[in-house]
Amino acid sequence: MSDAVAGLTNSKPLAKITDQSEPELRQWAVENEEKPFRAVQLFQWIYLHRVTDWDEMKNVSKKFLRKVSGHFTLQRIPIVRKQEAPDGTIKILQELNDRHRVESVLLNHGDHYTVCISTQVGCAMGCKFCLTAKMGLKRNLTPGEIVEQVLNAQSLLPEGKTLRNIVYMGMGEPFHNYDNTIHSLKILLNPHGFDFSARRITVSTSGIVPGIERFAGESDLQVNLAISLNGVTQEARQKLMPVSRRYSLEELIETCRRFPVESRKRITFEYILMGGLTDSMASARSLVKLLHGIKAKVNLIPYNEHALLPYKSSEPETARQFQQYLLDHGILATMRVSRGQGISAACGQLATEAPARPAGRDEKSGHPEPY
Image (cartoon, rainbow, N blue to C red; front, side):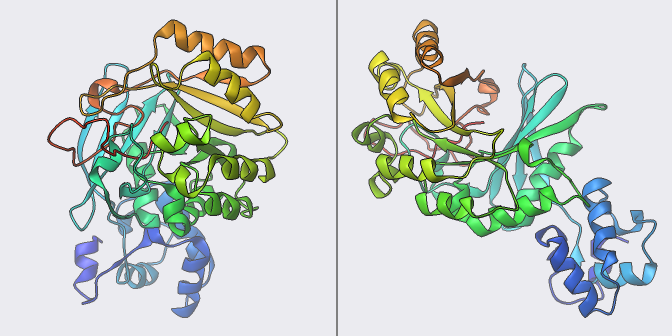
């Protein structure tokens, strides 16, 4: 029973079933004189078995399927293009119902994969070293549009491979689309569906302090938090990240100090190493002082150069020395291996509507979306 056939009996547009949480589907079932356990069945078929047609739901009554298919659609956002880099990274371009497009990235780690998903079409944060917000912000994604990026990524996995990690580090600022981001997390964590471990999901923000404070209260989620830092003083950070003009570095760090961190977790601070700009030993010393007393991990990211942006990556030896200084002073510091650069799928390179000419140094680009 396709959505098209089901839609013949319903003149209203069908709602996306992936926009619905299990409690919402339970409520819908009760309102339509069905047993609440039907919602559990739907979740299992959609997210565990990943069916794309109602007729594939073998243990669900035909009567209920006719009812639910007359209200909801199973149709996912279609993949319009996929590009694979030599390192196995796959960039996935998907088209939404309003013809806007969004990208996500599937990262190959050998025995498992990570998917980097988007929460907005474009970005409004205005960070000067990222291509994404050259698009500007088009709109927020719905919970279903966020979740379906994970379903689409799973459909591209080689046989025998698993999707282990999900990172909210694609296009957009998750805390500017807070409610839909949280809604999608609850769907991904639901034990009747995806059943992802909270320890395997990370949400990254450019530093929206009210969002971080609100996120701290989501005690039922317990997913990881990452902060895109990229500057060790207020002056340095606000030159790169305009968000720091509204939420200062001091305010951001104090908010992180108050953030409840589970005993086995740390807040991840993403720090992009740009040659002559963020990679000095003075910056390394300042970073150690800045993070003192915070249960932190620093993820160092060599800048991914792009012809449309003027910044350069640090020299490998400079980056190594920066990392070693952090390690020598008690900070867990990792160096990210950039993936997908050949297909513009690396950190800060996601953009579905690129500008026509290179940016000057005084032009704004987008939010740094590391993964």
